[in-house]
Structures are given as C-alpha cells and as structure tokens.
Length: 268
Figure 1 (tube, helix red, strand yellow):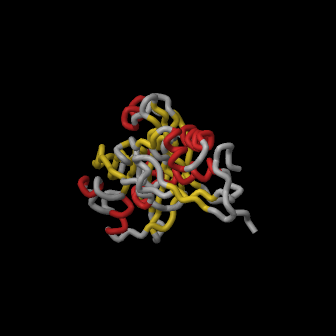
Figure 2 (figure 1 turned 90 degrees about the horizontal axis):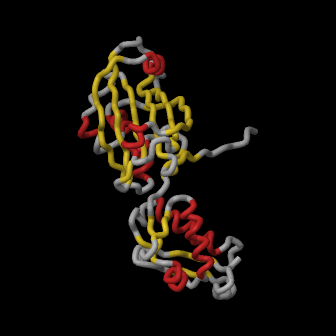
Figure 3 (figure 1 turned 90 degrees about the vertical axis):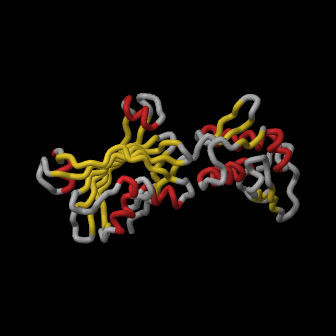
C-alpha cells in the first residue's frame, strides 16, 4: 500500500523514475496499482542494480528527501526501502554524505559451476590473486578425496577471489599434477574450471558439503574481516565423465557478502 504522502494512483498507472547522481542511468518502474508495497518495489530494484553491478561500492544515492522528491514518493516510503537494504548490509547511511552503496552480496546457485564463471555472469567483475601454486604431498584427506595414495604428489592452488576490489572468498584446490599445467598468470585471468575444460576435461558431477565456522586470524586478514567473523565453508570433489576425481576444493566465503541459492522440489 502507498504510504501517506505518495501521490494517489491513476487507474492502471505505472510510474517510471530516475534518481540521484549514481542512479541517473537507471530507470525504476513503480506500479502504484500493484498490491506489492512501493517501498518493496523500490528496494528490490535497488538490490538488483547493486547485484548486477549497475550500482557499485562507493556510489552515493543522495539523501531521503532528494530521493523522495525525484521518485515522487513519500519520505517514509523511501526510508523503509533504504532501511531494508541497510539491514542486508548493501547500503550504509553516512552523516553529511547521504546513502552509499557498501557492497553486493554474491548469491550463487548450487550447481557444478566455478565461482569465477558465476561472478562474471552476474556482472560482479571477478579478480583473482594466486597465493600458492605448487606441488605438495597429499594429506590423508586429500588422498581420500582424489583416490590416490597418501603422500602422492598433488598440485595445490590457493587463490583469493575478489569483486569490485573487495575479497569474497579464499579458495584452496588440489588436483592430480598430470591433469594439466596450471600457469599462475592464466589462473589470475580466468577460472579453474575453464582451464580444465580447455584441457579436455569434461566435468560431470561433484560431491559437495556446505558448512559454517568462525574466521581464523589469518583468514580474517585475507578476507578483510575481523577474527571470529562468520564464514561459509564448502568442500567439493569434482569428477569427470569417466568417474575420475579431478579436483578437491576446500573454500571459505565471507558470510556478509556471499550466499548459496537452493532450489527445492517436492518429490512426486
């Protein structure tokens, strides 16, 4: 329902509006005849603009008075829309400055895809810093996951993945060394799964476990979080079309900036 101060709708009217310095290139379609509250329509469209990179960290949206004037909405309606995104950690109010984009939360579908591909498809502008790329003896856990003898040589990759200049995830992967030559420069320019596909590896399936824990001091430094901050964890073993284990990964993600999307179906 429109809040007091919103102009009454005309029959069948949909309002398109632009707003603010960072919003000048964006159109917002507000349907005043819809049962969906105007504040929710506005917050959804702002969130979509942030998630797809149309609004980036640091962008200023102006203050509530300016926004309400430009959008033809009441100030309480705009305040409620802004507050919903402040609560999600996407916006912040700064005294004397106005409302500012902080960051977007990455929402990743649960499927056999790489983080790099998912971020790129979402317009998040992923970048990668390779921390380690070397051969190491397989630990018991790694050997069990890859189906090789303990102590056998594996390639260890440690990478820091960022979007819009902010770290999102620390990725640790183990691969059989004979699988492909993992060049550090190429790894910093693209995703691991793309390199596997380019080498003729056909990814077919994976086993994956998702969990959560607190950040260690080392992880906090890498991910620009405080020690003890909430992290999402993922362990995945990927298999090719012959059933061979080709990659074992243990990853941590900033819970403040990252989420997994599930699609649940009822069994017939």
